[in-house]
Length: 355
Ligand SMILES: [Zn+2]
Image (cartoon, rainbow, N blue to C red; front, side):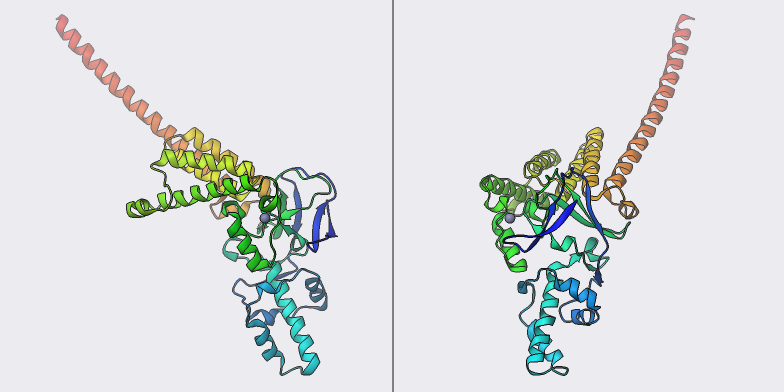
């Protein structure tokens, strides 16, 4: 479905070898290496020193940028290796170790929420380049123990598969460029940053950011924070829902039909529920599920177990509507009973009057 090609300006990249439909699982791969989530630059060597020659070769083949290394790293590597090497051999060992550190830090993927499954290196996924308008969604799926990559829109044969190294949906260009330059050492020239409609993209993302900031303040329910917020804050739940619906439109226009859209649909559903619009809440939950499936596929047992995800939310809404229906039925019964009682009373009164 894809091939690894060396590009003119970005090193390796993955390219579609056939047309790929939205929602298709393009990659499902196990990590070649997993390290615990608490590993840091001063403990990383204990793991890198244990790599097999094959793993060493595989890791060496991936892109590496020195921007990810803290300035003191080279010195600490040298100090550690001094006991074992000297002269030119020491210099070579330091360079090799530094490269392996940087390669790991450049390519590591956080597995699961809060890195709960560790940090992994995935040989296919690690070759994927960045775009601020990615065409795939990647995620570690603990139910199947693999990193999955799904097409979030139709991809044509020959197109490059592009992921996002940052959460681009709510960041403006300046912030995105800063993060990418600092952590990955490149100036992004993607269609969103430099394409013909870059100005409109920027406007949409600015608005998305403002909406996000306004909602974050609104949900704190703090009058002082609201009064001093630098940007507008929704005045009530109805306006919050209207802003979220605007977000959904902006995300779609921006081609960000991935986790940002899943999240926006969920928020729409929650606000609709707060406003007593149960049918609307369910409609948004179903939209959330549709996009979630596109991004993650259907094997999401881990999310249901964690009481997360759209399927769980839909079941919650269904239960609530069942409870409401039971309540309605009980109310109707009580009212009917009351009515019967009143009718009886009235009939008795009428009968008395006749006498
Ligand atoms: Zn970009």
